[in-house]
Image 1 (tube, rainbow, N blue to C red):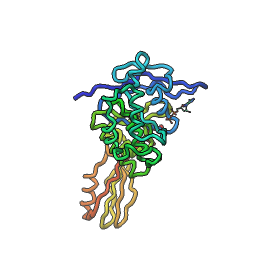
Image 2 (image 1 turned 120 degrees about the horizontal axis):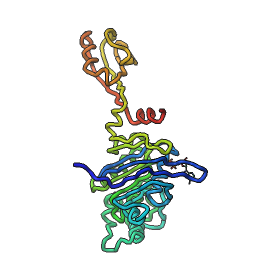
Image 3 (image 1 turned 45 degrees about the vertical axis):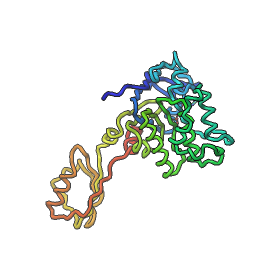
Image 4 (image 1 turned 90 degrees about the horizontal axis):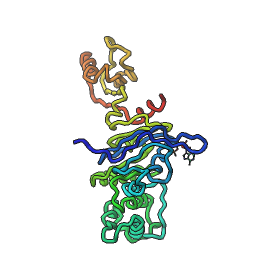
Length: 305
Ligand code: ADP
């Protein structure tokens, strides 16, 4: 099934005062129901992009269409189509989550009978904290409350700016679960992150922004496949004799009586050939571990060039 685009950006430019080009002709289409990750080093232009969508920063030029609405013609509808989860925790410590969500719903003009406060609190696992002061919530709970706050007007698209910045590993997994449950409800999600693992685990597609340019955009899987080298480590019982292999296709990292570690070009060599080579020499393979490329490799590769 071909998914429709719910957000489309064409030739988006932002030049700040002082001739700082934060975004250069950015083109991007976001598909319904996906989780799209935007990666990039500090200063890449990620916040500028989000701020333009949020209506906080004016673009210099380009076209932005969100949920069918043009940002220039229908800024209010664009705003209502988006739920924006900021990075900074900015909730009044003396409000309860319930009160805060009610106020936010009021800001968006959601009628009392249409409010889904309890459902949202349940979704982000804060139901039992509904009536506690926000100041008594843990850091993780506060982050979940920010997600909840962005959902009061049932936006079809949710944008999260560095949702797990500065959060420990366990809490991060927890927040990922919240984000996945959102997606299950059909919400389209755009998030920025500088944790490559986050993008790898959570995102269907990944875009890499560098110096205001979108330098790569693909499914997470294709992005990982872009790295042509793979590393395999064999636990063995004797050293491998290397002849008859073309050495521009591989790089031997370890070759001892107990371990053989090889880095190779996926186009030229494959694991079957390597196993065959070992077996032909009567070597017993006790264990095999493969070290796949991760997004960090892709990222370093792309941003270096
Ligand atoms: P990121 O979110 O990826 O770290 P930003 O969008 O914050 O990147 O920044 C992109 C570029 O724009 C940087 O060079 C930054 O210094 C510049 N910039 C961001 N905000 C402003 C501003 N309000 N005025 C001038 N320059 C800015």
